[in-house]
Image 1: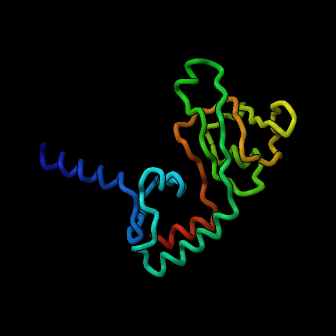
Image 2: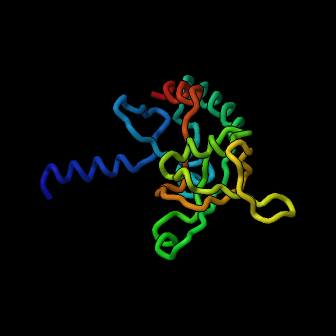
Image 3: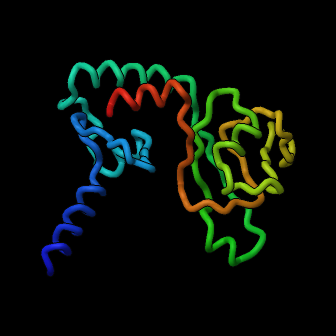
Length: 168
């Protein structure tokens, strides 16, 4: 291995590690991958506060309070062809504000959910129905066409961005 190859390997390994309480995000960060606490714990990642500074604890408390205003909806993909079945995610989560509508869901998913894709849900005692853009998103839905590679989608609210900036 060359010296630059070793540095690259070290950098790659460091990038794959979870952030510690004392770590900060740089101003050039373009993408942050977030795991819900349950998935982090299931993956064996530490979610404790043992290394947090007082400022981090304040930001964490604010984040906890803000998270109570949101929920995760489970989305199942309907595949029209065998090829699509094997090339797209079969289910994923979307972090939405409580009371979010289908149009807000489409905004979070962006280009991964085409405009012509149908959003479907099964209401109590009824068959599966197509949801309108103004309908509130329940905890479980299906979509007719999905082109995204991730298993979790969210967009930070302005308040969440302010909380994240406290950590930087």
